[in-house]
Length: 179
Image (cartoon, rainbow, N blue to C red; front, side, top):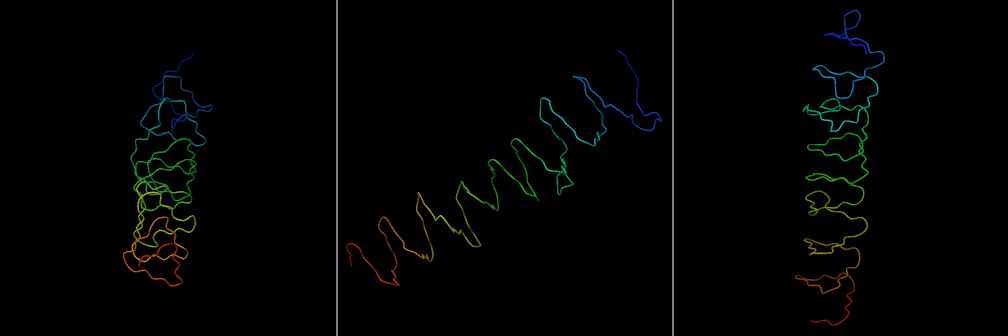
């Protein structure tokens, strides 16, 4: 086996780095270290190391061209993602599994939404149900203000009215009427 011992490798003109025409191979147990950067153009394939890839740069991101990690193309992620801070996305996000998040101001969802501690509408249009109806399976449904019902109201038990009852059409009483 041949050996070359040198303090520095430079190109023939001694004006820059040498060209590794056929690449470079680092044997198992050794690595490339240094305080400079690694500039790579083309496809990079990395893997097989026994731990996580860690970026120690803490630069915050305020656009698509700032931050500790900048990805100019799309990113496909096969496993879970945890975001410890804000997640600002200007393009589309597709999630094949479950999205879990807390302390959210606005939720725009197509499909089923499960609220862990209830739904509170404090302004705007309130809660509007255009299909399916409202099904309260436990607790008491309390309506304050005027209730406008465009169809029949059916109660399986009794109805207690603290105020007066106004009837705009015929009143049909089934059973006894106590006056």
